[in-house]
Image 1 (cartoon, one colour):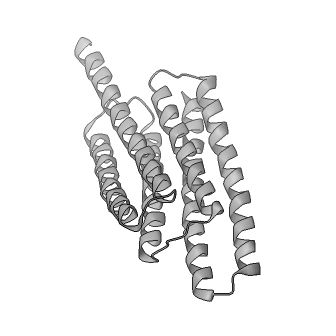
Image 2 (cartoon, one colour):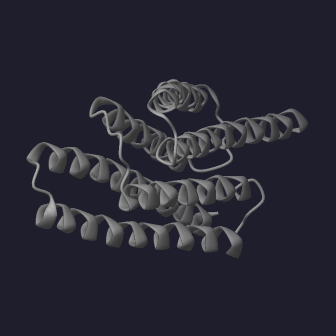
Length: 212
C-alpha cells in the first residue's frame, strides 16, 4: 500500500510538472511575440520569430511526454481524458502563436497596427492566466481562485473578439491595397485564433475544477 501511495504522489508531480512546463513555454512564446510587434528592428524580429518556432517544437515535445506518461502510468492525478485534453489544448495555444509569428515573418510585416499590438498583448495576458491556473491544479479542489482565472481568460477572449472584428471591418472599409489587406487580415485571424485557443484551455480547466 505504501508503494502504491508513493507511486501516486510521484506520478502526480510528474504530470503537473509537465503541465507547468507546457503552460510556461506558451507564456514565453507570447512574450516574445509581444516584444516582436513593439519597436523591434527587422533583424531582431526575425531572430524572435525563429526562437518562437523552436519553442513551439519544445511544446510539442512536452505534449508528447504527457501522452507517453498516460500510456505507461496507471495512477494519474486527474481523469485520463482530462489530462489528454488539457495537454492538447495547451499545445494548441503554442501552435497558433507560432502560426501568427510565421505569418508575420512570411508576409514581411514591417508595420504593426494598434489592433495587432492589442490582440498580441491579450494573448500574453491570457496565457499568463492559464499558467497560473495550471499551478493551482496541484492544490485546488473546488478552488474559487481557479474559477476566477478561467473567467478572466474568457473575458480576454471577448475583448479580443471586439478588437478583431472592428479591425477587420476597418481594413475592408479603408485599405486600398488588396495584398496588404489580405496580409493583415490573415495575421489578425491567427492572433484571434490564439486567444480562442486560450479560452479553450480555460474551459478544460474549469471542467477539471468542477470534477475534482
